[in-house]
Length: 289
Ligand code: KIV
Image 1 (cartoon, protein in one colour):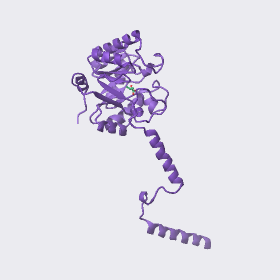
Image 2 (cartoon, protein in one colour):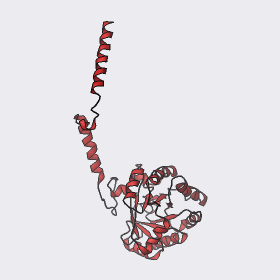
Image 3 (cartoon, protein in one colour):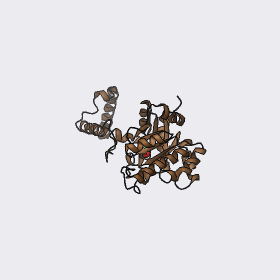
């Protein structure tokens, strides 16, 4: 089965249906997400926070991203797989950006890359697209530079900020992005950007007027407990269920209830009896010596 292409994603702007995207960081989750019919799987640098236990996405490296992206790609048959360019993998220069983005395609089996930033990265986006690497943009709250944006908070509430985000989205669409993530912006601004740019917008905390939606999987299934942003809906809350399973296992092992007959291999009694007898007779011989 061929994977969904960036061109198909672009065509959804006019024809619908709404585009769906989730993040994945390993083979098994990627397989489940793909089998659920989600259109795009992002190997996000949120990896740092929701899998590696880091406080931000800033320390995430190219090698960590490639390691996880390869596992995801191996599992995915239908969805478009996107590798997230980590901090300083594309900001230093165009040559480094092409080399690093190329590694997602060549070494990890991704179909496209995503990078954070507005018009200041138009030249990088243009160069990647020229090199044959499909690019998804990301404006609004950009976690890699959250500190300079005043923290993890809604962006584009005042006129100046809103104008900048709109202009950034227009510039990166013009530079060749096949779609743009809008993170943590007021719904009305996301609606205006969606009406204005020619490529699909994928919202996260950006209301329901975008052309598609993305959530961090570990947030929406309740696996990330440190904090829950307002825009996250928990479709299932797995952490308490998993902890409950671990506690039950501990109690059953302590009480000698696990493993039961059902989880044990019952054959072999005769062999054990013969060995026991042999051990006894060896011990007897030793005592008599
Ligand atoms: O890294 C990530 O998971 C992302 C999403 C929040 C879009 O960039």
